[in-house]
Image (cartoon, rainbow, N blue to C red; front, side, top):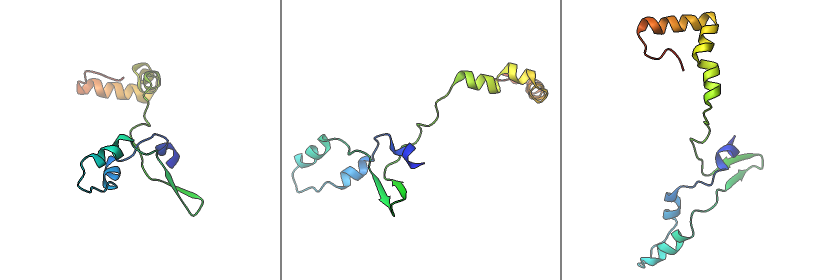
Amino acid sequence: MFGRFARFGCGPLVSQLSSIKFKGNIFSASTVLARGPPACSNQHTFGSSIIARWTCYGTEFQPSTRKRKRKHGFLKRKSTRSGMRILRRRMNKGRRYLSH
């Protein structure tokens, strides 16, 4: 479950900036930031469960027009009894689009 989120190299910039210690020199921070973000690492606890340190969201949904239209399209709605009920209800309501 956690491996799915941790496979993309994302890390919070805040954690990088908080680890920088400023000693009055402006250029000391630029050398740390020039290296780029660290690779995503996982912390192992008790040997069996894996806890992802940085997680990325929003990469799961990959839309497919063919699947969407086969499942929720006009022809699919028209071919079933309950689908015709949905189309009739949307038509009576005055919807511009009856289905996908």
